[in-house]
Length: 297
Length: 254
Image 1 (cartoon, rainbow over the protein chains, first blue to last red):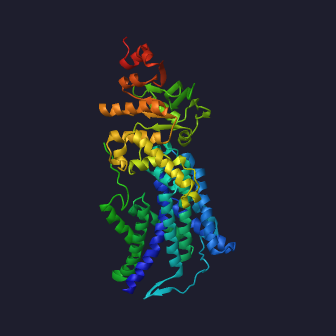
Image 2: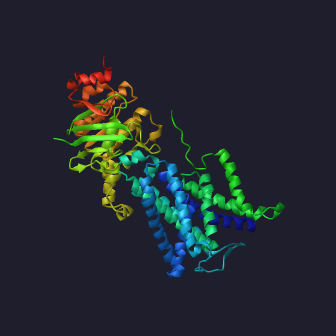
Image 3: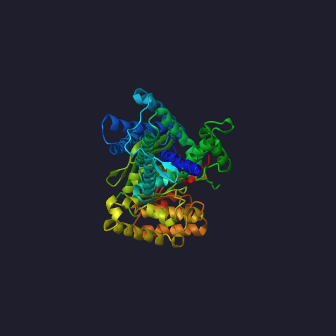
């Protein structure tokens, strides 16, 4: 029983970070219908920026985490301003091509730095002895990671539900023409969507870095796992990203915990999420929370 | 007196001239209609005024504001509102929320004031709510106040579209075929709303409409477009006897 609970706990930890990673992706898709292929690179950059601030410049970890969020906020905003603003009104496929280019450029830049090839790990800043509740152990980093994820997701949902700007962003996602006609600036909304996406990606990156260590391949792989998560949740649903992220984390941990080693199987954690994704999509082609648009003709 | 001045506006898409050297003067407080066959450029002209398109050449001025290159969100802040021909509503929201959202630009309190929700913030929200209720009352939308817009009938949705434009408290209202696809009774309602708007609210109206009977009845001035050019302008009586206009509508005899 405690083995099962242990898997549930680690599944929720991994899953909540998937959710946070997927959140930024959904934000961009929801407001502008653009699939941001470079999302994994933004996640990795966030982690690396936080690491360089804290280890190389000696800023306390909490402060450099906050600073890292601010930097990626403005970084992602400038990416939108420089590369994507001029593409408003162009076919979506061209914009997606641009994000593929962006991915290559970011890859190139990361490989120029030591982060591209070497492994780093954050200095421990929390107690290293894990907390044990009746046989189930949780490390402090995991606990803080889940708490931070919950806080960020809660903060963003509050922003979308209550603030004028958040409501304006939802209006744009719903109907651009109507939003423009009531005085909402579309470029401003797109810029903010990218900025918030960059910020949440950086938070996810820094958390992964803290839990698993900084390795570009691992961070990159997180970026790729975002795709099954958002497809499962429905591309345009924030709630979907959260639920699907946690489902994905749980499936992975259960597969790795119960299937690996029996019948000569290994690495099932990598494959199972995709298998289950396929099965779910057979029955719910728009994802769990995606909008199924019915056009009246 | 001129409220809106469109001068020599030309709009081209590749090799196609949607509008050619269009001049239009809108006087305040009256109903100006724009008519013409399908594809004549009526909606393109409205799109230029409301900032969705920018003219290839020519200028658009609203009072002291130059709107030639203004984006749509700026056009709506100078006092021009628009109701779309194809419904552009937030379909998942109630009628009330759709209208409250249009008061967005009237929210000028800070984040801090919003958090405490006291003083300016609550006062503004109350004012907005009051204004929205006035519009709901005027457009006779009371029974649908809490209904989800997507579930309402087409005719009522058209009315919500017009109400949302009104909620922006415009001095100039652009109506793009507000009566398209409606039955006689619904049309009569809309005509009454338009006349009351002019008389009671003093709003200047630019109307694009296909129903010539309605246009001739309620317009103070009419512009006729054909193939992107103004082929006639004047009072309904003048338009009714304008040879070029009759030819465009009925076809020339050769």
